[in-house]
Length: 113
Image (cartoon, rainbow, N blue to C red; front, side, top):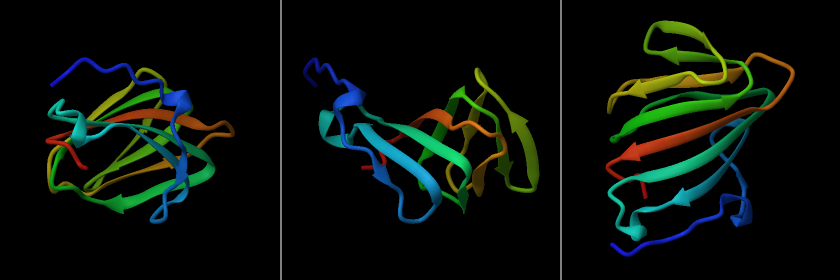
């Protein structure tokens, strides 16, 4: 792996086709050789990352906003500074329950893409 500087503000932001009002930037991808992938996500008010699961372990760090986090049968209210670790195969989702966007960092290990 070589050293790489990535400026997420310069990367394209896409509306995720499987979720509601959820926008994502692929910041670090498998091709970098970092052994992980990292995304910057934004859930607009009223938006939601609907329940789903991954083959990878996922860590989500909430930068700003208020979000309801669904982990299996559990429901938790999270805010800025909260971190969630989701094991591979665990159904999870996030719903913006506030009136401001939720900004988050998502890390997948091994890389999602």
